[in-house]
Image (cartoon, rainbow, N blue to C red):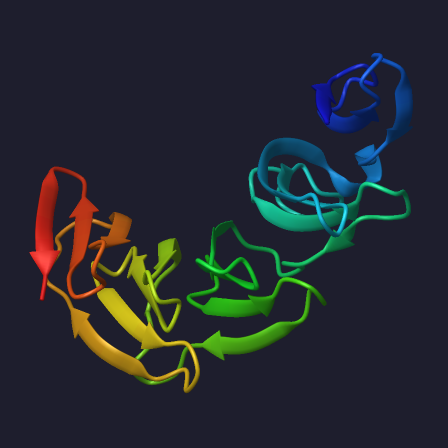
Length: 193
């Protein structure tokens, strides 16, 4: 997989080991590729983040899925919002955080949304960072509302939450044993029990 701006848009191309172009993977009709999130070699798929998606705010990040074998890319996050993503440890699902105040859990194989994590205990502002627990059973999210939430992936319920950050939460992570969460906002870092 090779990134190039040969058509004035950042796109992905597939080359063979001799350096011969096999095919263009992405299309300018799907925006400008910003980063590759994951390559699924077994199923010949690539997940990537694109901006300047037609019909959307040019600065919003959208998640796409494209086949290395050809065909159109699939837009996984169609809502007009900014998205960040995290893959589960087993690679079977992914979580996306969005500016529409939600966290979504997606089936990696089908590209379908399994759960939308929101509701009365959900975030009240855009959500930026998201991360899976080491066992893949929980997701932690941080929002511009200064809140950190830990969600049960199966039920979609908030397991625990922490607020009190003055600034938007920009980074979240689970400890290696999954028992603790750390969160950081501009100028502030703290563990969340």
